[in-house]
Amino acid sequence: MGAIIMDDAVVESNSIIAAGAVVINNTKVPARSVFGGMSAKKIKDTSPELISVEIARIAKNYSLYASWFKD
Image 1 (cartoon, rainbow, N blue to C red):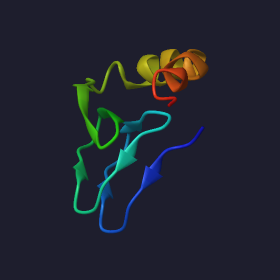
Image 2 (cartoon, rainbow, N blue to C red; image 1 turned 45 degrees about the vertical axis):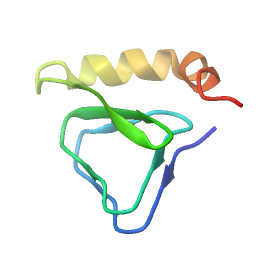
Image 3 (cartoon, one colour; image 1 turned 60 degrees about the horizontal axis):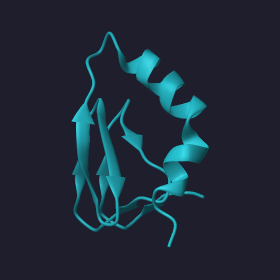
């Protein structure tokens, strides 16, 4: 299950878009933030020190997180 990023959305570096998320037009996803949902909203920010830890944790639990957004 992938995410959908609509036209004119801006996704900055080291941000995470959750599985099944829909980032709508003209949404700005700031650097080092986590967005999810339909339409995507900010879930949390991550510090520069923790971004690699967050990415590893989210990747490990990707299937679980994707199941939250199934119909």
